[in-house]
Length: 366
Image (cartoon, rainbow, N blue to C red; front, side, top):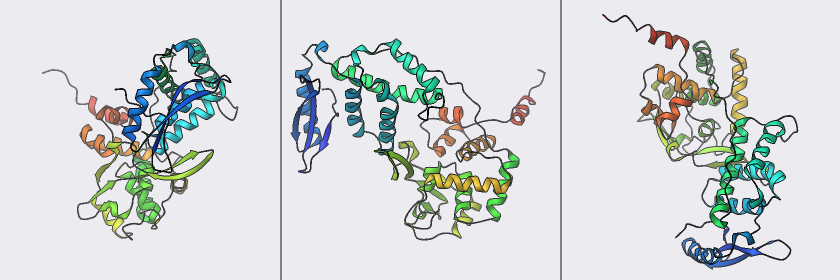
């Protein structure tokens, strides 16, 4: 039995309502059939039976638009992904896909038309009208579109296209130099406050900024010198407005326990407050990542260090760990990655001096 999860809603009376598209009215609007049940599994089973009946209809009679397919796919995605992920999908659909492709019939979209759409986004896809989007941004858009297309193919039997994803040129990600790192460490040690100790903690644990903002004092085990990553703070766009949400970490592997160096633990102990308080604010309300980014940039300016993104601390941590001889598998777990390949490919950036040190070990065969 195929798994169904689209267009399911929780009613005020406690029942689940599942809506299955079964055809079209004369005015072109999609026609739904509703089924009801007390549990999610029961409503999915009832929907599956309706889908089985509907699949006997000729595909040519199903005039599904991109807008309708996208709305149904989003309804399904809402049941299985994090709130922040859903908000990102909905934003891509409403701002990039629907304005251009929304009125198109799924059966009429060809590989050529979609490649034209991709080129349009690369050339003039910015919402402010000032140029094109990066290849990375366009790939994100087309990844969402591909999921919508797969949904339409699975639910309605429509064809799938083979558009070409834009190529991303791999760039060498920057890190703090040893001089910059030492300068930043000295500043944080000699100018201690809740913000500076949080940045110091990130520099020696590799936490993401959202994870850092979501860290409470109860998450730090001073006896065992470890911290537990349990939540993250994010600002997301919902219904045209942005709001701060506190949710679970990025993935299952992001929920992790990370050891803390002894000297950092000693500094943290001097600022400890109530267990349920966030370490950056010392209150029951967290700091949002954007605020932390701005504070970090102010500290960089005070240190005379170039303007870089907060995430650079995570890259720097990973690179320093590799330089110190950390096992890649251990490092991937410390960073919360699914496997060591992600760690090595994205976060480890050996310097030229390290490369020279390795090459200097080579010699003629005796």
